Length: 494
Image 1: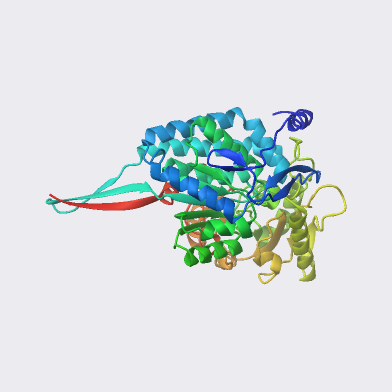
Image 2: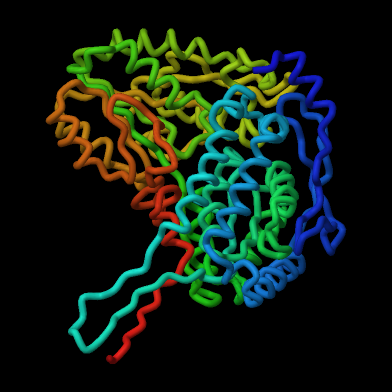
């Protein structure tokens, strides 16, 4: 790991790719419009990025469709697609410091998280998925002897992908790796709040041997480029990670256009449950702090609702506050810093608004509180709110910031009801040393993912996704490939 001085010096050497990548080359938005990429730690301008709209989306889709029909990628041997994607993974590894810096400067994530989580996990996702693609077999149905029923998978066509700003490189790779490995062409619309790493990735993909038009990266706003992509009649499938509100809009756009499939990974309000039979209170408190304060709380699976059994509630909160104190916002280029700034001032204002609502609705600020918005950078304060009720705004709505709502409970049945009292169902965490309870509660929680005595662990072999208002489909694992391929049944009469 480099020092702060070394990271700062390396940052000065970066060249930001700020144009759209369409059909194998960089180009300005057809309108000529741009939007600023701002460093949230310093509020300095990094670059003026091409602000694309429907015209640019059209150009990207045309390129994607042309190369898909040519078969240069879509009908290439799985082993050949694997070779190119593995080459891209190698190039990403060679440029790992550059990718780490791009997302840290663009959205405020700590360099420590980029080096140890985002970049290696993105590379692992690409390598693992690439290695899978020539090991996925078709099927033969158990039909009568005079027939042969073949079940095969084929690339779906042009995939639109809309990705968020909280994990810019990693979330993009969760879509790109399976979509490209399956033989599709992709038009990626990264968040306007963090586009720089995806633009660099596209350039390296061409160097790795990806044919022109197979990957297009079109930066722009959701209401322009994103909406155009979702409504496009020649986009066959749409993959999205972001808010539940926008997810609903995208599903409407699909219905208004060509009924393209929409795969959603949306918001969350994940419960973290600590039972009094948890033997290691310190570990649970450390885990609870990490679950809400990592990445400034800008995490879809953030453990933002904490339920502690009343018999241990007071000592647990004291331990929690000690660990919360280790998350002091600071320069994200400093490897010792565990919390950087929020992505922009609007997000910082949103966090402050939710903290104020918690105060107004009767909550007690046990740690942290309203952030100072007068200084340089968009730095929040890690905040713990106690004395919360299920009807409070801070308990029901996704904040996407370092704000933890805490409540007590007495029985297992009570806490299951509290945990499930949400429109979301993305993640959940249970802390207990009772194996039967762990299985029982994990099965009862309405969530796509449950961690027992931990939070957030996983790798590319495990599917990631939610239920209810948190979405459908899954990223990662072999299940991700299902989203980007079509089943074909061929019945042969012998």
